[in-house]
Amino acid sequence: MKEEKRKIQLTGGSTLTISLPIKWAREAGIKQGDELSLIQRADHSLLVIPEKEEGEQIKSAELELSELESFEDNFRYLIAHYLVGYDLIKLLSPSGFGAEERKRIKEEVRKRLIGMEVVGESSKEIVLQSFLKYEDFTLRDAIRSMSEIILSMHGDAISALEKGDLNLAEDVIERDNEIDRFYLLIVRQLKAAMSDPELAKKIGVGRQRDSLGYRIIVKSMERIGDHVENIAKNSILMNPESHASVHAPVSLGTQSLEGIKEIGFRTEHIFTKTLASLSNMDMKEANETIRDANALIDTLEGINERVLAEELSITDKIHVLSILESLGRIAKYCADIAEVTINMGTWIAGELEF
Image (cartoon, rainbow, N blue to C red; front, top):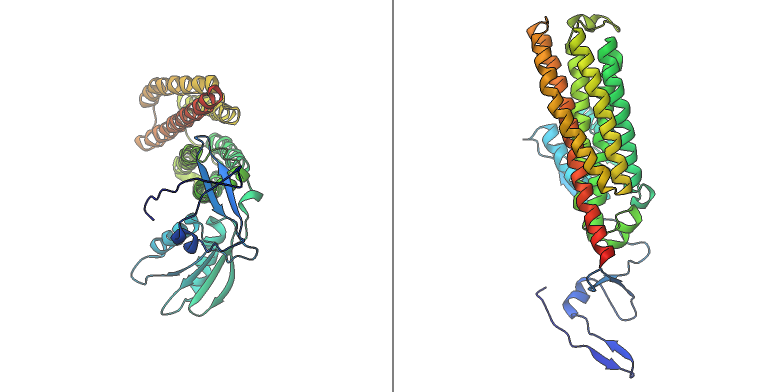
Protein backbone atom coordinates (compact mmCIF):
# COMPACT_ATOMS: atom_id res chain seq x y z
CA MET A 1 0.00 0.00 0.00
CA LYS A 2 1.31 3.42 -0.96
CA GLU A 3 1.39 6.25 1.55
CA GLU A 4 -2.02 7.71 2.21
CA LYS A 5 -3.11 10.74 4.18
CA ARG A 6 -6.18 11.03 6.36
CA LYS A 7 -7.70 14.10 7.98
CA ILE A 8 -8.51 13.98 11.68
CA GLN A 9 -12.19 14.52 12.44
CA LEU A 10 -13.69 15.84 15.66
CA THR A 11 -16.76 13.91 16.74
CA GLY A 12 -18.91 14.34 19.79
CA GLY A 13 -17.13 17.53 20.70
CA SER A 14 -14.13 15.81 22.34
CA THR A 15 -13.18 12.68 20.35
CA LEU A 16 -10.67 12.71 17.51
CA THR A 17 -11.26 10.04 14.85
CA ILE A 18 -9.52 8.91 11.67
CA SER A 19 -10.66 6.50 8.95
CA LEU A 20 -8.67 3.40 8.06
CA PRO A 21 -7.58 2.58 4.48
CA ILE A 22 -10.12 0.04 3.23
CA LYS A 23 -7.51 -2.00 1.34
CA TRP A 24 -5.39 -2.43 4.45
CA ALA A 25 -8.45 -3.30 6.53
CA ARG A 26 -9.50 -6.02 4.08
CA GLU A 27 -6.01 -7.52 3.88
CA ALA A 28 -5.78 -7.55 7.68
CA GLY A 29 -9.20 -9.17 7.95
CA ILE A 30 -10.64 -6.28 9.98
CA LYS A 31 -14.41 -5.94 10.22
CA GLN A 32 -16.84 -3.81 12.16
CA GLY A 33 -16.62 -4.39 15.90
CA ASP A 34 -13.04 -5.70 15.85
CA GLU A 35 -10.46 -4.24 18.21
CA LEU A 36 -7.10 -2.66 17.32
CA SER A 37 -4.09 -2.23 19.58
CA LEU A 38 -2.51 1.24 19.46
CA ILE A 39 1.10 1.43 20.65
CA GLN A 40 2.79 4.78 21.14
CA ARG A 41 6.45 4.86 20.12
CA ALA A 42 9.22 7.10 21.43
CA ASP A 43 8.98 9.40 18.36
CA HIS A 44 5.24 9.90 19.09
CA SER A 45 4.16 7.76 16.12
CA LEU A 46 1.45 5.14 16.63
CA LEU A 47 1.66 1.49 15.68
CA VAL A 48 -1.73 -0.02 14.78
CA ILE A 49 -1.99 -3.79 15.27
CA PRO A 50 -5.09 -5.91 14.62
CA GLU A 51 -5.97 -8.07 17.63
CA LYS A 52 -5.35 -11.77 16.95
CA GLU A 53 -8.32 -14.05 17.32
CA GLU A 54 -8.22 -17.04 19.64
CA GLY A 55 -7.35 -20.22 17.78
CA GLU A 56 -5.65 -18.38 14.95
CA GLN A 57 -3.80 -20.72 12.61
CA ILE A 58 -0.10 -21.01 13.20
CA LYS A 59 2.38 -19.87 10.58
CA SER A 60 3.10 -22.81 8.29
CA ALA A 61 5.11 -23.59 5.17
CA GLU A 62 5.96 -26.46 2.86
CA LEU A 63 9.55 -27.16 1.87
CA GLU A 64 10.30 -29.55 -0.98
CA LEU A 65 13.77 -31.00 -0.59
CA SER A 66 15.89 -31.04 -3.72
CA GLU A 67 17.40 -34.36 -4.81
CA LEU A 68 20.08 -32.42 -6.70
CA GLU A 69 21.46 -30.82 -3.53
CA SER A 70 23.25 -32.29 -0.54
CA PHE A 71 21.70 -32.97 2.85
CA GLU A 72 23.43 -29.91 4.35
CA ASP A 73 22.23 -27.70 1.48
CA ASN A 74 18.63 -28.78 2.06
CA PHE A 75 18.98 -28.44 5.82
CA ARG A 76 20.05 -24.82 5.37
CA TYR A 77 16.67 -24.17 3.72
CA LEU A 78 15.00 -25.72 6.76
CA ILE A 79 17.06 -23.53 9.10
CA ALA A 80 16.03 -20.47 7.06
CA HIS A 81 12.35 -21.38 7.51
CA TYR A 82 12.97 -21.85 11.25
CA LEU A 83 14.66 -18.45 11.53
CA VAL A 84 11.88 -16.68 9.61
CA GLY A 85 9.48 -17.94 12.26
CA TYR A 86 7.45 -20.77 10.73
CA ASP A 87 5.89 -22.88 13.49
CA LEU A 88 4.78 -25.74 11.24
CA ILE A 89 7.06 -26.95 8.44
CA LYS A 90 6.22 -29.81 6.09
CA LEU A 91 9.27 -31.39 4.50
CA LEU A 92 8.36 -32.98 1.17
CA SER A 93 10.32 -35.52 -0.87
CA PRO A 94 8.90 -36.32 -4.35
CA SER A 95 10.62 -39.73 -4.43
CA GLY A 96 10.09 -40.47 -0.75
CA PHE A 97 12.40 -40.45 2.28
CA GLY A 98 14.82 -43.32 2.78
CA ALA A 99 15.20 -44.81 6.25
CA GLU A 100 18.67 -43.32 6.78
CA GLU A 101 17.64 -39.90 5.49
CA ARG A 102 14.57 -39.86 7.73
CA LYS A 103 16.68 -40.83 10.74
CA ARG A 104 19.29 -38.17 9.99
CA ILE A 105 16.68 -35.43 9.58
CA LYS A 106 15.19 -36.27 12.99
CA GLU A 107 18.61 -36.35 14.65
CA GLU A 108 19.71 -33.05 13.13
CA VAL A 109 16.43 -31.31 14.02
CA ARG A 110 16.75 -32.43 17.65
CA LYS A 111 20.41 -31.45 17.74
CA ARG A 112 20.19 -28.06 16.02
CA LEU A 113 16.69 -26.57 16.30
CA ILE A 114 15.41 -25.84 19.81
CA GLY A 115 11.67 -26.38 20.19
CA MET A 116 11.16 -28.24 16.88
CA GLU A 117 9.65 -31.72 17.07
CA VAL A 118 8.48 -34.28 14.52
CA VAL A 119 4.67 -34.46 14.82
CA GLY A 120 3.79 -36.46 11.72
CA GLU A 121 5.30 -38.40 8.86
CA SER A 122 4.50 -40.48 5.84
CA SER A 123 6.54 -41.98 3.03
CA LYS A 124 6.95 -38.59 1.29
CA GLU A 125 6.38 -36.14 4.13
CA ILE A 126 7.85 -35.20 7.51
CA VAL A 127 5.95 -32.63 9.58
CA LEU A 128 7.83 -30.47 12.09
CA GLN A 129 6.24 -28.18 14.66
CA SER A 130 7.67 -25.69 17.14
CA PHE A 131 6.29 -26.02 20.67
CA LEU A 132 8.47 -23.35 22.28
CA LYS A 133 6.74 -20.09 23.17
CA TYR A 134 9.07 -17.11 22.83
CA GLU A 135 8.03 -15.58 26.13
CA ASP A 136 8.80 -18.83 27.99
CA PHE A 137 12.49 -18.43 27.20
CA THR A 138 13.55 -14.78 27.24
CA LEU A 139 16.53 -13.27 25.47
CA ARG A 140 18.33 -12.88 28.80
CA ASP A 141 17.73 -16.58 29.56
CA ALA A 142 19.12 -17.64 26.20
CA ILE A 143 22.21 -15.41 26.44
CA ARG A 144 22.85 -16.61 30.00
CA SER A 145 22.64 -20.23 28.88
CA MET A 146 25.02 -19.57 25.97
CA SER A 147 27.52 -17.80 28.22
CA GLU A 148 27.50 -20.58 30.85
CA ILE A 149 28.17 -23.22 28.20
CA ILE A 150 30.97 -21.12 26.66
CA LEU A 151 32.66 -20.61 30.04
CA SER A 152 32.52 -24.31 30.87
CA MET A 153 33.82 -25.20 27.40
CA HIS A 154 36.66 -22.70 27.71
CA GLY A 155 37.85 -24.01 31.07
CA ASP A 156 37.60 -27.63 29.95
CA ALA A 157 39.42 -26.94 26.66
CA ILE A 158 42.46 -25.55 28.52
CA SER A 159 42.29 -28.38 31.06
CA ALA A 160 42.05 -30.99 28.29
CA LEU A 161 45.17 -29.52 26.66
CA GLU A 162 47.12 -29.50 29.90
CA LYS A 163 46.16 -33.05 30.91
CA GLY A 164 45.97 -34.57 27.45
CA ASP A 165 42.40 -35.64 28.20
CA LEU A 166 40.97 -36.85 24.89
CA ASN A 167 37.45 -37.48 26.21
CA LEU A 168 37.21 -34.01 27.73
CA ALA A 169 38.42 -32.38 24.50
CA GLU A 170 35.85 -34.31 22.46
CA ASP A 171 33.14 -33.32 24.93
CA VAL A 172 34.06 -29.65 24.41
CA ILE A 173 33.72 -30.10 20.66
CA GLU A 174 30.31 -31.73 21.11
CA ARG A 175 29.07 -28.90 23.34
CA ASP A 176 29.61 -26.38 20.55
CA ASN A 177 26.40 -27.79 19.03
CA GLU A 178 24.54 -26.36 22.03
CA ILE A 179 25.95 -22.91 21.32
CA ASP A 180 24.76 -23.15 17.72
CA ARG A 181 21.27 -24.20 18.86
CA PHE A 182 20.92 -21.20 21.16
CA TYR A 183 22.26 -18.90 18.47
CA LEU A 184 19.58 -20.03 15.98
CA LEU A 185 16.86 -19.74 18.62
CA ILE A 186 17.86 -16.19 19.52
CA VAL A 187 18.00 -15.12 15.86
CA ARG A 188 14.50 -16.56 15.43
CA GLN A 189 13.33 -14.60 18.48
CA LEU A 190 14.91 -11.35 17.30
CA LYS A 191 13.41 -11.66 13.82
CA ALA A 192 9.96 -12.10 15.36
CA ALA A 193 10.51 -9.20 17.76
CA MET A 194 11.33 -6.86 14.86
CA SER A 195 7.74 -7.09 13.62
CA ASP A 196 5.98 -7.46 16.96
CA PRO A 197 6.63 -4.76 19.62
CA GLU A 198 4.64 -6.63 22.26
CA LEU A 199 6.67 -9.78 21.73
CA ALA A 200 9.86 -7.73 21.87
CA LYS A 201 8.92 -6.60 25.37
CA LYS A 202 7.96 -10.11 26.46
CA ILE A 203 11.33 -11.60 25.51
CA GLY A 204 13.26 -8.70 27.02
CA VAL A 205 14.05 -6.46 24.05
CA GLY A 206 12.98 -3.09 25.40
CA ARG A 207 13.34 -1.35 22.05
CA GLN A 208 13.01 -3.01 18.67
CA ARG A 209 16.11 -1.27 17.35
CA ASP A 210 18.15 -3.14 19.98
CA SER A 211 17.43 -6.33 18.01
CA LEU A 212 20.25 -5.53 15.61
CA GLY A 213 22.68 -5.01 18.49
CA TYR A 214 21.70 -8.29 20.11
CA ARG A 215 22.04 -10.05 16.75
CA ILE A 216 25.68 -8.88 16.56
CA ILE A 217 26.25 -9.89 20.19
CA VAL A 218 24.97 -13.47 19.83
CA LYS A 219 26.84 -13.91 16.55
CA SER A 220 30.04 -12.89 18.35
CA MET A 221 29.24 -15.39 21.11
CA GLU A 222 28.66 -18.11 18.52
CA ARG A 223 32.06 -17.35 16.99
CA ILE A 224 33.66 -17.48 20.44
CA GLY A 225 32.23 -20.98 20.80
CA ASP A 226 33.78 -21.94 17.46
CA HIS A 227 37.21 -20.78 18.63
CA VAL A 228 36.92 -22.70 21.91
CA GLU A 229 36.07 -25.74 19.80
CA ASN A 230 39.19 -25.05 17.72
CA ILE A 231 41.32 -25.09 20.90
CA ALA A 232 39.93 -28.53 21.79
CA LYS A 233 40.53 -29.85 18.26
CA ASN A 234 44.14 -28.69 18.31
CA SER A 235 44.73 -30.27 21.71
CA ILE A 236 43.62 -33.61 20.23
CA LEU A 237 45.87 -33.20 17.19
CA MET A 238 48.83 -32.02 19.26
CA ASN A 239 50.01 -35.52 20.10
CA PRO A 240 49.07 -38.48 17.87
CA GLU A 241 49.51 -40.80 20.86
CA SER A 242 46.47 -39.20 22.49
CA HIS A 243 44.26 -41.07 20.03
CA ALA A 244 45.34 -44.34 21.57
CA SER A 245 44.94 -43.25 25.17
CA VAL A 246 42.32 -41.38 27.13
CA HIS A 247 45.03 -39.53 29.07
CA ALA A 248 48.26 -38.82 27.18
CA PRO A 249 49.80 -35.46 28.22
CA VAL A 250 50.89 -33.47 25.19
CA SER A 251 54.59 -32.82 24.71
CA LEU A 252 54.42 -29.05 25.12
CA GLY A 253 57.33 -26.93 26.23
CA THR A 254 56.98 -25.00 29.48
CA GLN A 255 56.85 -21.64 27.69
CA SER A 256 54.06 -22.76 25.36
CA LEU A 257 51.89 -24.36 28.03
CA GLU A 258 52.29 -21.52 30.52
CA GLY A 259 51.63 -18.98 27.75
CA ILE A 260 48.41 -20.72 26.75
CA LYS A 261 47.26 -21.01 30.39
CA GLU A 262 48.03 -17.32 31.02
CA ILE A 263 46.16 -16.10 27.93
CA GLY A 264 43.38 -18.61 28.59
CA PHE A 265 42.83 -17.23 32.09
CA ARG A 266 42.83 -13.65 30.81
CA THR A 267 40.35 -14.37 27.99
CA GLU A 268 38.01 -16.06 30.47
CA HIS A 269 38.20 -12.97 32.70
CA ILE A 270 37.56 -10.66 29.72
CA PHE A 271 34.56 -12.70 28.60
CA THR A 272 33.05 -12.65 32.11
CA LYS A 273 33.62 -8.90 32.34
CA THR A 274 32.06 -8.41 28.92
CA LEU A 275 28.89 -10.20 29.99
CA ALA A 276 28.69 -8.15 33.18
CA SER A 277 28.97 -4.87 31.27
CA LEU A 278 26.25 -6.05 28.86
CA SER A 279 23.91 -7.16 31.64
CA ASN A 280 24.28 -3.84 33.49
CA MET A 281 24.65 -1.69 30.35
CA ASP A 282 27.80 -0.36 32.02
CA MET A 283 29.62 1.65 29.35
CA LYS A 284 32.70 2.33 31.50
CA GLU A 285 33.17 -1.37 32.20
CA ALA A 286 32.66 -2.08 28.50
CA ASN A 287 35.43 0.37 27.68
CA GLU A 288 37.70 -1.36 30.22
CA THR A 289 36.94 -4.65 28.50
CA ILE A 290 38.05 -3.26 25.14
CA ARG A 291 41.30 -2.00 26.67
CA ASP A 292 41.89 -5.40 28.30
CA ALA A 293 41.25 -7.19 25.00
CA ASN A 294 43.66 -4.92 23.11
CA ALA A 295 46.33 -5.42 25.79
CA LEU A 296 45.93 -9.20 25.55
CA ILE A 297 46.31 -9.11 21.77
CA ASP A 298 49.52 -7.10 22.17
CA THR A 299 50.82 -9.66 24.68
CA LEU A 300 50.23 -12.47 22.20
CA GLU A 301 52.99 -11.19 19.91
CA GLY A 302 55.66 -11.83 22.56
CA ILE A 303 54.24 -15.25 23.44
CA ASN A 304 54.18 -16.27 19.77
CA GLU A 305 57.86 -15.40 19.49
CA ARG A 306 58.68 -17.55 22.54
CA VAL A 307 56.75 -20.46 21.05
CA LEU A 308 58.69 -20.21 17.79
CA ALA A 309 61.97 -20.26 19.75
CA GLU A 310 61.05 -23.41 21.71
CA GLU A 311 62.28 -26.87 20.77
CA LEU A 312 59.01 -28.19 19.44
CA SER A 313 58.14 -29.96 16.19
CA ILE A 314 56.86 -27.78 13.38
CA THR A 315 53.49 -29.51 13.65
CA ASP A 316 53.18 -28.81 17.38
CA LYS A 317 54.18 -25.19 16.87
CA ILE A 318 51.42 -24.81 14.28
CA HIS A 319 48.86 -26.21 16.74
CA VAL A 320 50.09 -24.00 19.59
CA LEU A 321 49.99 -20.88 17.42
CA SER A 322 46.48 -21.83 16.25
CA ILE A 323 45.35 -22.11 19.88
CA LEU A 324 46.87 -18.75 20.76
CA GLU A 325 45.27 -17.18 17.68
CA SER A 326 41.87 -18.52 18.77
CA LEU A 327 42.35 -17.04 22.24
CA GLY A 328 43.18 -13.71 20.61
CA ARG A 329 40.08 -13.93 18.43
CA ILE A 330 37.96 -14.63 21.52
CA ALA A 331 39.29 -11.41 23.08
CA LYS A 332 38.51 -9.54 19.85
CA TYR A 333 34.93 -10.80 19.80
CA CYS A 334 34.58 -9.72 23.43
CA ALA A 335 35.68 -6.25 22.36
CA ASP A 336 33.04 -6.31 19.61
CA ILE A 337 30.35 -7.17 22.16
CA ALA A 338 31.60 -4.35 24.41
CA GLU A 339 31.37 -1.86 21.53
CA VAL A 340 27.75 -2.84 20.90
CA THR A 341 27.07 -2.46 24.63
CA ILE A 342 28.44 1.08 24.51
CA ASN A 343 26.26 1.90 21.50
CA MET A 344 23.13 0.51 23.13
CA GLY A 345 23.95 2.23 26.42
CA THR A 346 24.36 5.54 24.61
CA TRP A 347 20.89 5.19 23.07
CA ILE A 348 19.41 4.60 26.52
CA ALA A 349 21.25 7.61 28.00
CA GLY A 350 20.09 9.79 25.12
CA GLU A 351 16.45 8.84 25.64
CA LEU A 352 16.70 9.52 29.37
CA GLU A 353 18.15 12.96 28.73
CA PHE A 354 15.41 13.69 26.21
